[in-house]
Image (cartoon, rainbow, N blue to C red; front, side, top):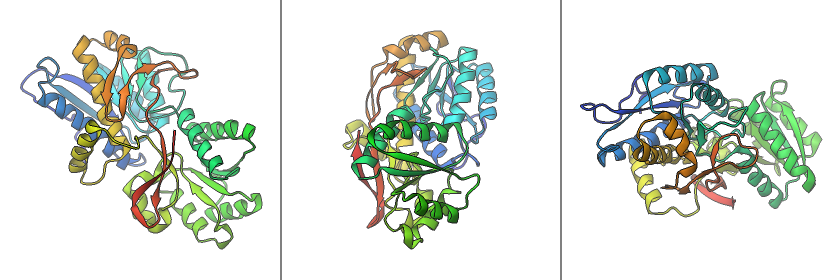
Length: 370
C-alpha cells in the first residue's frame, strides 16, 4: 500500500463531507508498518460508514497527515487540521507523538480520539477534549509484569533508550514488581553495545531481558546477540511494547524472533463483528491485520456514533465522550476516568501476552490474558 497523498479522501466527493483529521506514522523514523495498519482500519471504518449512507446522508472524509514519529510535526498537523475545519482528529501510534498532539488539540478545543498510543499522561492536566481507545500503559504493563512473575522471572533487566515512554515503562515495571520480590535493572542503550548487554545480563544473573528500544535497531541486534550467546541460553527476551507483532520483525529475525512475549490488545475469541472486520482488513492489507488495525476501525466506529448523535459540532463531540456506548471489534466501548488518567479512557480493551510460535513463527500463541 502506497503512502497516501497529503489530503486523502476516503468517501464520496460529490457532497460536502464531514472531515476527520488523521495522524499516522507513514515514513521513518516512524514505525511505518504500524501506521499502515492503523490507517487501513480507519479507512475501512470510513468506507463502511459511507456505504451505509454516511452521517445522515453526509459522507465522512479522512484528511491524513504523516507524523513520522515527530512530536513537533504532529503538533503542527493538528494546527493545520483545525484550520481546515475537521470535526475531530484521530489516530497516532507513537505515545510521545500522541502526547504532543493531545496537548495541541486540548489547547485548540479540538476533539482528539487517540487510537493506539498508551502513555498514561497524554496530557499534563485533565482534559475534556481527548479520549483514547488503547489501554493505558500502566494497565497493560502491569499485566505483563504478572506474566513475568507467573513464568518464574523475578530478576529482570531492561535494555532501554532515552524516552518518556521507555522511562514510564521501566517505572511501571519496577513499582509493580518490587513489592512482589522482583528487581528491575536498567541497561542504558545509549552507552552499551549489544555485546555489552550480554555481559551485563551474565553479571546481573538476570533471567529475563525486556526490549525497551526502537525497531528495527537496536532491537534486532540485541536479539541476535543474546540468542547467539551460549551463556544466556536460559534468558527470556520480552518486548512489552509489541515489536514482534508486525511482519517486519519476523522478516528481520526469522526463527530468532520467536518466543519473545509481547502485549497485544485482542480478545481470545473474536465475535462476529471482529471476524468480519478481520477478514476485510486482511484483504485490504494483503496480510493478517495487527491489533493496531482493529484500533483504527474501532476509532471510526466511535466517531461515527458520536457524529450521528450530535453532528460535527466540536464542543458537542467532546461532551459526548462519557455517553459513548458502542460495540467495537473487541468489545463494547465506553469511556470513563480511571485514576491517574487525564483523558476519557476506554477501560479496558482486552489485553493478551502472546509470542510467535517457535515451531511456526507466523502463528501467535496466547501465554497470558488480563
